[in-house]
Structure formats: C-alpha cells, structure tokens
Image 1: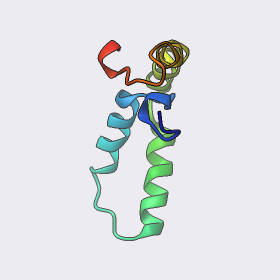
Image 2: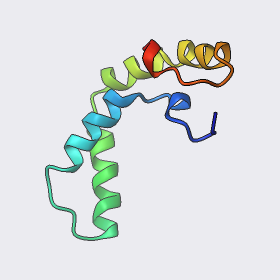
Image 3: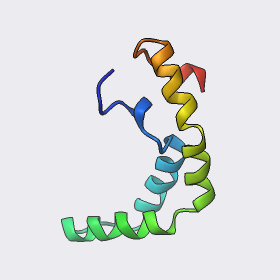
Image 4: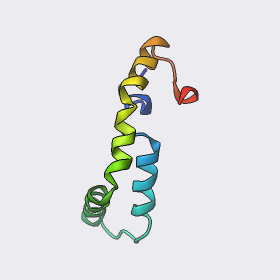
Length: 76
C-alpha cells in the first residue's frame, strides 16, 4: 500500500466531504484565497466529525495489516 493511500488517512471521507462542501460554497480567486479558505473551513469543521473519523483509525490500520496492505474500503 502506498504511503499516501486514503486507507492510511485518519480523517475519513465524511470529514473530507464536509470540508469539500464548505470549500465550494464560495468562489476562490487566488492561491492565497484557497489557503485561507481551507484553513477557515477546517477550523469551522464540527469536532464530532473529526472525532468519529479518528476513532475508527486504529481499526482501519489493523485491517490494512491483516490484508497485507490490501484495500479496506469494502470493510468500513
């Protein structure tokens, strides 16, 4: 499994999806605007979403090891 695989990511797709929805609400006009928008959206992300994502991280890592680096998306 590649080190940048989403299966190794402690923040699951729910958190990223919520962040993405916040990002697309306002047109971004520059790289600085993008950086500021990401920071603002991340800081306003509901902590419960992040907590839920990271709570399952250990189980996901164990599954990756159990599958010898195979994909685990179908398990969660």
